Image (cartoon, rainbow, N blue to C red; front, side, top):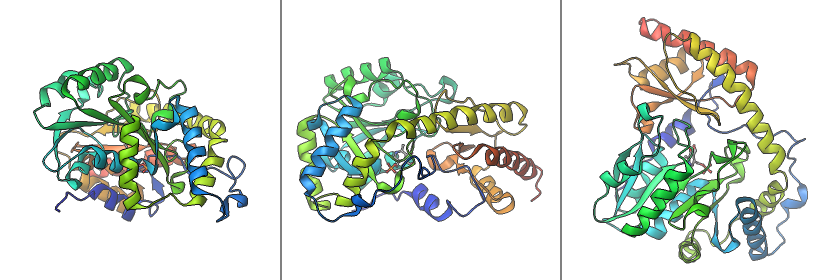
Length: 363
Ligand SMILES: Cc1ncc(COP(=O)(O)O)c(C=O)c1O
């Protein structure tokens, strides 16, 4: 079956980690051993997968205030998103997808023979979730709405009121929303997860971004029990069980979430002030920064090619930024500012100088 390739991921995998100043990685770096040391007892091949799975479901359910039977385990948010779409979509269905947005959601419906229909998250409305724009884009055959909260690429979070209203409306059209909440825990006082707000809202997330544990691939979806059962039937074809090593390490991580989260929030708040100061002096970029998290969308002057600019910045200044075109937002750059603060200052300086040079047609 034909599908649209996830070009952004291909780009990220071939670029990230290769440049000295990486403003493209949207998660925290892995924690030092004093915060989360790998426990060698976790590396055993003993242990009953099913027991470990249940224990991890309990840990996730307790943390996010849902009942364990609503938890689907997955390899990262990515696999959770895939399994949710697999459980809900058939060939020919429609999916309303926020734009700009994360390409991993915008193109995922095509894998299942479904088609994506964009609805707008608007720059001039601080990327607010407008239930009206979802309703306007709706047409018969739509089974799913896909969005992020907080929003990738802008970092702004949809309000609890808007999400609840969306859930209520979805009831009337017999559809669901996939709410990717992988950036949620950057908020020091996070709102309830989407699934706790309304049964039509499905949460997906992982330990990747806030906790810096992307290589564990510990993710989940929170959704009504019948959908969990159905998705697990799909999963049996896919992988049968997660690796016991991952289950053990993820269980261990759930006992350390508080210090890991504190580290992320502190870094985000400190670096946000640095980015704010840099932006006020920038002659190249304008942006509104979200209150929490480490990502932001920088607006370029009209007619600047973000892909060419990103390429030149990487080659000439060793600064890697994500071109907005990958998020359906040409003319922007998405930056992530979770790096160590002193390096961030230098990275931002290089970004400004490199962009000025690009505008003037010099290297
Ligand atoms: C919105 C969103 N969802 C999912 C992912 C992938 O997350 P994971 O590592 O949990 O699969 C990303 C990564 O950039 C993302 O931005």
